[in-house]
Structures are given as C-alpha cells and as structure tokens.
Length: 379
Image 1: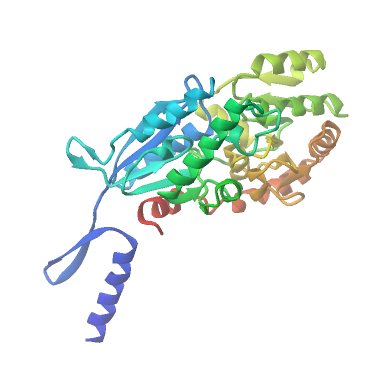
Image 2: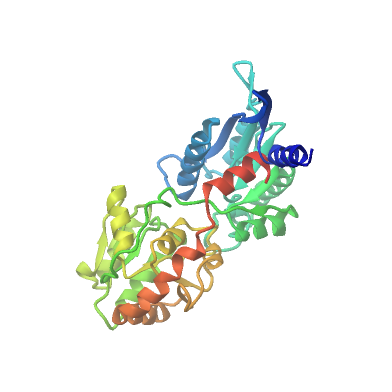
C-alpha cells in the first residue's frame, strides 16, 4: 500500500507540471503529454530586423521542439504619423484568434507593442517593450513625441490602452528593467523571464584576439558613436569589428572617417552564423552600451562565449548580467572612460581571460525549458 501511495503521489506531482492524459496499460500508469495549439503575436517594422525578431524565431522553434503546434501572426507597424499608431493597435484588437478553421487556439503569446492588444481568453504577454517613445523616452531626444495637443492625446490613448489590454493577460517581461518600466507607467506587475540567444548552444571560448566586437544594430539608441569616439581616444591601436546594420550605418562610417580611424574599424554588416560564432569566440572583449536597454542579446551572447563586456552605467538591462571587474567593465558613458578600459583590456590579455571566464555562469540559467514552462504552463 505504501508503494502504491508513493507512486500515486509522484504522478499527482507530475500532473501539476504538464498537461497530460493518464491511462493504464498492463498495470502501469503512463502519462501522455498533450500538445497545444499556440499562436505567437509579433509586430514587424518593415525592413527592420533585431532582437525582437530573434526572440520570436527562437520561441517558435522551442515550442515546436517540445511538441506544440505553433505559428506566428505578424502585422506591420509604423509609428509615423502618430495617428497611425492607434490604427495599428485596432488592427490587432479586431483579430479573432480564438479559433482557426473552427479549431480552438489554446494560447496566444504576445510580445512587443501593439501585439498584446489582441483579444483571447488565454492570453500571455512576454513583454519585449511598450512604445518607448511615449513612455521612458518621452521628453528626451530619443522620442519623436512633442508637447502638442495631438501628441499628448495619442500618448494618453496609449497609456489607457496598455493598462487595459496588458491587464487582460498573464504577464512576463524579458528583463527586470522592462518589468520595472511597466510597473512605473501602468501599475501592472510582470515576472522577469530572460530569453535565450538563438545561438546559446553554439558559443565557445577561443583565444583573446586583438579586436573589440560589436553585434549591436547600427541605431542611435545603441550608441556606437560613443565607441568610435572612444577609439579615437585610445593609447593603443585597438581595432573594432561591427557585424550588424541599421539606419545609422552611413553616419557612423562618416564619423569613423572624420575621426581618422581608418582600418581600425570594420563595418562588415550581417555575417553568416558560423562567422558570428568565430568572431565572438576570439574577440578580446565585446562592446555593448545602449541607452537603458530592454535586455540585450549581445551582452548575453558575449558572456556565453566567455568574453568580457564593456558597457556603461546607464545601459539598463545589460547591468542585470554584467558586473564591473567581475565579468566586464562598467564605466561612465564618456569616450575617455571607455577608451581607458579598452586600452587596459588590450594591454592585459590575462585580465580579459579572467573576466571572460566568469561570463558563462552568469547566463547558464537562461534556457528555453524555463521559458516554455512559464509561458505555456505558468510554472
């Protein structure tokens, strides 16, 4: 009897963890994990690709690998003119995703604004970010909202809409930083849930080469101009390789020329996956210093590859992983301060290796198993 009770208790515990059917065969209890029909709701800015797109691709693959039926619903988004923002949100609200071809959809997973406006009886939000121009960037040079009656009306509409539509869902955020912003502006809580890199199982530690790597999108918010100015102030001939693209590429190339950096800076654009892995593996360090970043795949990837991360005191989500003098360098967002740390790392390969060695453990718990268990089963 004791053995039977212990076995029953074991399966009760299992029932709480995964959706399953239990049946008897030959006196044995066997669980069958039931797959779910899941739609991932994604916002796509045409001709733009970044971390949010990688997150959606990774989540879709992870759910399929675990036996779920998954597809991605993506609608285009444009933030100019501002009256189109409400139209984009309304398009999501008008979708009926409760059934597809008369078959129920078990779950929708929403990501960044305005995908979470969609209606569904089982809606979970994995918040990438809200419309930052109307929130934490409002009143700064990063925002395109100005103090006019029209823009104030759009911003007020966004605040009301987010409180209502996010309030309908079970909520996670891709970092503590995003969760904190959500609470500050809407009063709603969210549980931090870190997304793994799509390359998580491919990173390796190679040698500590003579270059600094940047994998950040060439966008003003990533502050690559700060890196170029820092290179101009270094005492060594440290060079930098940039392996992305974006709207600021031409202006950054001009700046590199104006600063006389010459061949010390390479703009390679997007590179094949195998080359990306090699460049991470053999960099002396990785630079990633955006303005109050949501999360930052670049820093997580650098730590997984045992590379020290050079960042700044105001880089937001990056600081949830990078600690000064432990696995990277955290400095003031000033060219001279960054230049000093770059020179130190280039002059001291042993220091770079020591900082790099502390990286993998900082991101070891970021797994798709943990993400799927939270989003699908609420664990």
